[in-house]
Image (cartoon, rainbow, N blue to C red; front, top):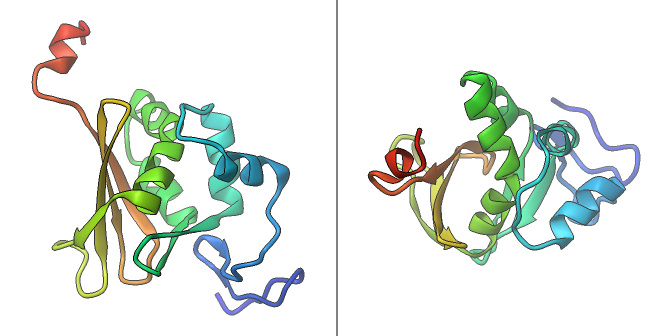
Length: 148
């Protein structure tokens, strides 16, 4: 896209306005200011439609938006909801997780990993810093123990 934000002149990319001082909706501001916790699928959808960027400890910005939402749509309804409620865990992962190259994403793409509240998360970005996929890694046998 070659559009610019009417609010601050920033470039409108895959994850909304790229300007670092962009003023987001109250929903997105509240989500970004909170600790990682489960959210409603509807809040996740609204946040990804708006799009937002977060700063990492590696002086890069990671975008959450249309690309991630499109990827989520390719999963079963139950898996979609499970992924949506974990959005803030993915945000916390890119803000403070370990980073390494994303071997499937090509040059300039990264994988961020972090343990939060006893769960492990992996977030994959493309070469532009947009989130392509988020995984919550369930320990071997945990699904059987929970009766799934």
